[in-house]
Amino acid sequence: MKITKEQVEHVAKLARLNLTEEEKISFTKDMEAIISFADQINDLDIDDVKPTDHVIPINNVFRPDVVVPPMDRELLLSNAPSQENGCFSVPKIVE
Amino acid sequence: MSYNDYEIVMGLEVHSELKTKTKIFCGCPNEFGGETNTHCCPICTGMPGTLPVLNGTVVEYALRAGLATGCKINMFSKQDRKNYFYPDLPKAYQISQFDLPLCYAGEVAIEVDGKPSLIGLTRIHIEEDAGKLLHEAGEGSLIDYNRCGVPLIEIVSEPDFRSAGEVRAYLEKLRSILLYAEVSDCKMNEGSFRCDVNLSIRPKGQKELGTRTEMKNMNSINFIVKAIDYEAKRQAQIIDGGGVIIQETRRWDEGKGITVAMRSKSDAHDYRYFPEPDLMPIITTEETMEKIKASLPVMPDIRKALYLKEYGITEYDADLIVASRHVADFFEVASKTAKNSKTVANWIITEIFSRLNEDEKEEGKIPLKPESLGELVNLIEDGVINSSTAKEVFADMWDTRKAPALIVEEKGLKQISNDDELKSMAQEVINENTKPVADFLSGIEAAIQSLMGQMMKRTKGKANPGMVISLLKEILGGMK
Ligand SMILES: [Zn+2]
Image (cartoon, rainbow over all chains, first blue to last red; front, side, top):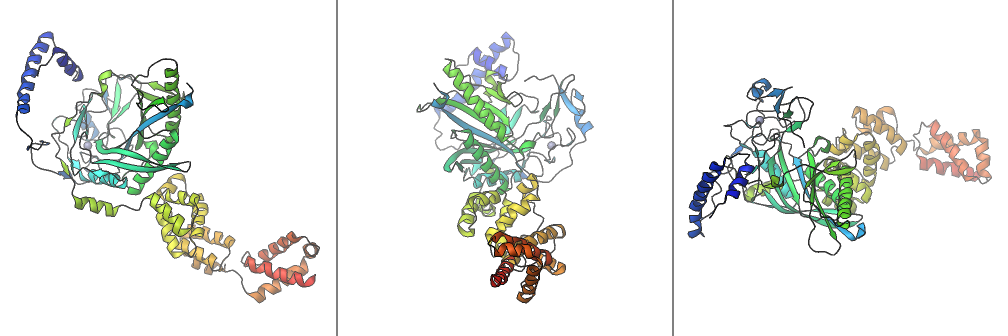
């Protein structure tokens, strides 16, 4: 399948990535190679193959509904680039 | 075109927080409020390298909600990542469900102005709630992640609504079902039951749908009804003026009474869902389903029908009683003890409800044993006490939780039904009250009420009223 530069730009925008013109060209090539690799599946007879929803064949991994003490707030916030009044602080959002 | 020539078409997405003890993917407490960021850990604040583990009770509650609304269950279900950037979502993706939700194809029966209809449910899936952005004056936007990771079910309806009245009936019914199933406390003012409305209009008779707008995160049924009314009229005005409706998200501004477009980019709905690699698929067995089905209480509609048919109470009373599961349970147990269910219903709606606030009414927090109310009703039915004495006994019972028979005994409240005792008292009353007696004899029937009052005063309200009236009439009759 052919991948266009516009598609790369769209995906980059969704992922909030600023790509240079050179990067756009090289990513277009890379993405096309990846998609073409996956395209090989279209040529195979896979009627009897179940979709892979997960690579590990384990189901129903549940946790009991029991409270674990939360983390101390100061410790939790210590990883944040910016904090204020017991909160994580991010650049102002206007909606 | 006149506004009335348009038909409104709406579909609803309801988000309801599940009342588990812990969050969906970590052991942090699932509690409303609290100091900011004190119900949090590295998992629910999206720290790199952490791994989610699904709370089993979330699956159980979602299945309960699904089975209570007649949904089919996907025996094989999985979770997916919904990708978008907003700081209330620290991982930059929400774990939700895409193509294999836990429940699908259910329905909710509603009734508007006596006209019944069915609202189809497309699906019910599980997902995590986001944190809260606090827009305070200061450098940046502040975020509280206490709510982040609280388990939600999203209940998506078919576009089956044609009026705000249907939306109101549906939300009230759905809320009541979730409360009966005991999966959510559905407190709208705390945001644990909130609703998005997708609304479009089309000329009546037209098949294809118009362009829809979405009104998000509304948590008051009254606001929702007002917002629907405003938005439908706004769309009609645009179309009538030759304009086109833009597909967008709008917000209800209660202060101004209008809907306002929210600034959002056109690609905001490109969520790039993909299967969540950190979580394993969810398999539901027939056995689990049967167990959950068996544990669900009888739902309000079925109870109402039963009350009308078997208990003979009015539709109005039945609606008030089935509104809360615990009130309905109380009514049923009390009715088993009592000889008259209608009287039981009356006492619940008048005396009990007047002593409860709205929250207590909804939670059915009645501090009495239902059997006690049944016994009280029987004391009236058996003529041991009259209904005004019963109110006194009830008040005492409410405060002390004593058995009604004991209160009657201790306070000596037994109705005086002794013929001789009442007869001599009646004779005295007639002798001492010449004016009303003369009035009665001259044909003013109502004058007997004054004599009746004297009798009640003398017996401290304990006389059997029917008996007093017939005794008075008997003596007065002999004087004519
Ligand atoms: Zn946590």
